[in-house]
Length: 282
Image 1 (cartoon, rainbow, N blue to C red):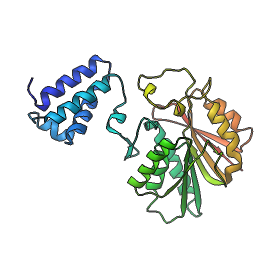
Image 2 (spheres, rainbow, N blue to C red; image 1 turned 90 degrees about the vertical axis):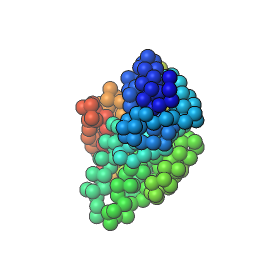
Image 3 (tube, rainbow, N blue to C red; image 1 turned 120 degrees about the vertical axis):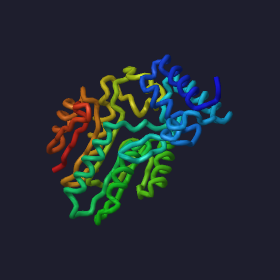
Image 4 (cartoon, rainbow, N blue to C red; image 1 turned 60 degrees about the horizontal axis):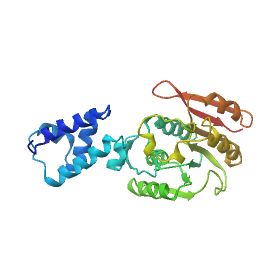
């Protein structure tokens, strides 16, 4: 086999498909793009591009990794979310498209409350993708908004702070197990906490992500219910909580919230599944 892009690309796609990677073509393109530092458009239109030895070694190494279902985002160290590129690592959950709904609803909240100063808190920030996306999309408005974010993981906070610097946003970060190290009240509290039932396997890639960011008790509601119990005293008057949850548990969480909070709303994701719960204070 010669060292041209096309020959190695076809072989890589074949290897990925044989190992059950359904996104073989796009993943192969990402692997080649990452190794060669050339755009996929360049590579696909220059099929005779001669790969260097170092590039071939990198491609083979990452193809072997991907064949184990190791997430492509951990291979490249990046994941796109809400039109922005975020650094990720095995210490952070990989951002999902459905989570963009939190950003959309948070921006709606900000627009509705445009005539007042706001404080926004992100609990369990992970890579910081949610709070940074919100901050990045409010830089041009004439409104004072203070952004805070927390996580229980020191390693996740390192990644989040790196993304904060990368996107030139101003977020204050703090290590905290939910609200244990949080003081004060906030107008908007957002959270994408662990909500998968313990022992549920999901897809093959989940096993590579941090378990503490995914699993939560027998039915997946343990962390969220603990969060809601603590959040009450930190939510300002006329404030709102936005929390992502397993569609199977939205109703249960909603019923629990209505025992303490004034009102709730639910929203569906791109797959038309209940995914987001909005909880309102008095």
